[in-house]
Image 1 (cartoon, rainbow, N blue to C red):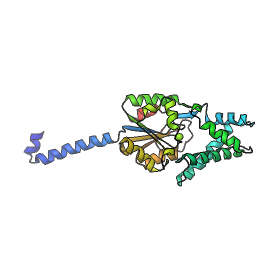
Image 2: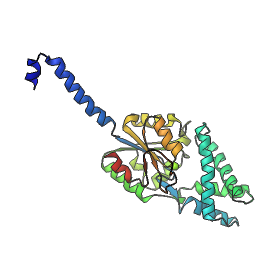
Image 3: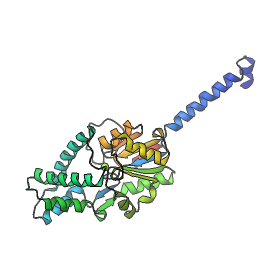
Image 4: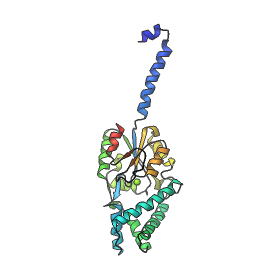
Length: 262
Ligand SMILES: [Mg+2]
């Protein structure tokens, strides 16, 4: 081959060009294959026990209110969708522990009112305390399996979460903290998802580029749009099929991430 090129008078520069094209193509393919996987935490890796609406109704019961689980679930989703819309416009509520506390107290108060109860500060405070206790959370079984398999395959793993600083204790308590090289938690930073800066902080701390990183989470705004806008490959986790109109890469179970990466 080499002789033929030389004989045709194309010489070394042409050979070098051909090698570069071939090498370049290989590098491009490699660069598209993520080596780092970042995870959202709430409702992606961990969830309240037995679930947010069930635990919510249990706390209401202690306060003498009989709440309907399906109604709690529906109203929570409606209010959270409104919050997400405001987040698109730059509203933040988790990038400082005090701001987060104020937000959740007001959110629970509103949720109680929307359900038709007379909201009292005691109930909202009880709800905030209940959902701030690490012992009231557990990991999704598919999350544990996916993390184990990704770690075994040599992927570098990180957390990018809009959460209060105690998330780190929670992940430690659940035996998950050891999987992550970095944990970027909005309560410790000035920024929260979907702001690109929180994704950049995680990339910098791990020393990886957005092109070789993937982020997965359950929010189309904070996780999917946020990660994509920061240049990462983004995957929506849609466990319950709640986003039929969503256009983009999506999984129903975190173990599906493994085959997406092959
Ligand atoms: Mg989440």
